[in-house]
Image (cartoon, rainbow, N blue to C red):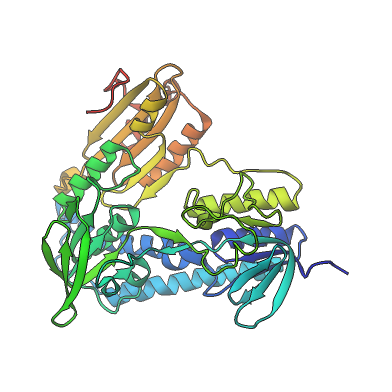
Length: 460
């Protein structure tokens, strides 16, 4: 008789949890996965996928304006929010069904329940009250949107999750935050005709990205009509009239708006899971502390994805899941290397980034910086003033390319290929030896000939 009910019990059916459960089951393990909401997780249901679909919808307005320069007349164009909203929700539900079908095909038992940990090998299902045992437990519960707790009227605001199912678009919105979620929703709302204001406590948006990229994106968003107020925070929200809100800022300004969106970050979903009682150590941010193999302080419990607060990206969670299965079920100890992971921000302009920022690189070695800015060919006939910025950071001694940063329409697509070269440790000479593809925006990556900085001084 088996000592445990399952070889692996996965808590959380997002992208990472589903991948780990499927691969372990295909390797012959007895696997169950518990999900309290819907199979698919943040990315599929209330994150990357629906957000990108809304961004596609928001981009058509600019495309219609650009089309006039190419001879097209589209003055009759009208937008219907309910159509876009419902089509997006239908698509995420379709993807959720595919995830479920894949779990079923792999022989994974799916449990529609909230699971909490009782001890290193025991899990309780809170709705049914049933307890099950497992040789290994994998925590893949992701995170949730943060909200302030000390601001009067904070409950009058919404989260990014709420944005996907709004009954109607507001005429105006104040978005609190300066990170990728805030800017992506600023892109969505402003692109759909909503008067959009971003309020951010820092001196410039997109903290954690290269300083030139931050400057470029902020200036271009302001050029296209997004109001950005840096160095400010919200101190209170009051209801006024019918469905209107009065927002008070730390600089004593007051803004009237239809909606307030909190986009101030995400927190790991560890509360109430019984982790500390089971001996699982948490970080100061409440994330599960793990080693390079995703093992927690309890030998039978692992954690992957956003709940570990390492690199909070869906593809990272998937790669961590694969490494976990390789290590525990395939006999091939594998850890995922979190260095040089590319990321994208679907702001306007969009951003693609991989490797070291200029500031980081200067702290490590002497560098050369290459940079170019240009108006994409399509924008010239369109009369669209948006420009693309490309930047490359190179180790001055080894000639290795340490980082690539792009702000422009093609940025997220181009950065995937640039990431291969950065991860492989290719040199600037090897980039330069690659023949350009003309006419493309991508060719600029191999045509940046002269560095703009030759010393190790901080950027101006």
